[in-house]
Length: 303
Image (tube, rainbow, N blue to C red):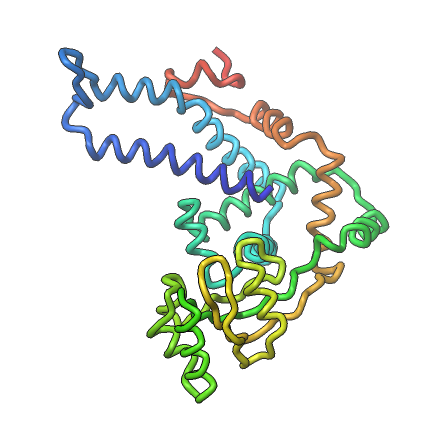
């Protein structure tokens, strides 16, 4: 579900961006000229609506249909439910909690608030689609026991790093640390890691199972006591000295904490596919399309 949420938001943002860019850059009614051929704004708009209009307006209609039905049946999604899903994203998606919003924005072009709203919508949709599905307590407990590996967060280590390209420099810095120099101050002064040097070498909290950080760094940190620093060691990008700032033990979520999630997962397996539920929902509502360019492409609109 997480990938669908992100790519759904991204697709919508791309479409909006296309509209904004072209309207901001267009001069008058003329969009462009190729030799003697002029491309006009109306022509551009019609082409854009034909290619992207139907699927985009349909997604908007689906969303409004879900909100309407949920309101009619008094079904809600609490902030706590959204927060739990955000926490699952945060633990599985990036290594550092501090970087989560930055990753969302720079890699996917969305804000945390946009992600929250899309998660809220998807949970609401799943609740509606599984409203009449019965899942027993025994089934949920069995699922929890058989899939407990999925309800855990690996141990996390907060690591600070000094990166140097030459072993001679790393040995010199190590000796300065032994003599009592401040790790963060030296990292800011000499570390060649552009991502962390300005923060005193702080890499944030890193999962011990991370595939994004050199295993040499994680292995060394796991063998280091909190507050201690390592001897120089080599990784793919140079020589490292790390300090272990803190560690968060592995967490296994209690059954009560994930019960609602398990209920949805098991209920969805019994329910009709979500796209079929949405088609049925949209088809029974009173919907009118005024834009003729997209109207003929929407199956639920009667001529």
